[in-house]
Image (cartoon, rainbow, N blue to C red):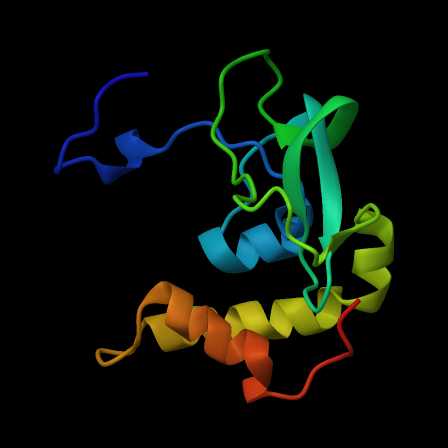
Length: 145
């Protein structure tokens, strides 16, 4: 990868392994106004957990497990979000993308669109605070899994 410059912020883009809501092209399109090319990818020795009260998953290292996600077509080093608290009692089972699409995707898209619009406002909160305000029920949404 080359270095990013202030004149070309797109050069700062890195390869990212996605494994949750960003597997849905509709969600990516809302966030990026495009859908970058990608293909199936596997992250070995990790497990994708459901999180109590959340509609998105967490991954943690787990020997002899694997997480199916998306990335570029070649084998390479990539960035991904890994849950920090390995003993979090809210982690359970396995998060299922197909189930998420049926139960939560419509609301998640609505929430993401609202989040993106609010981030454009001059007096918006930080990204995390804005996301939490939408997530915590600024609009009523479906029950969390």
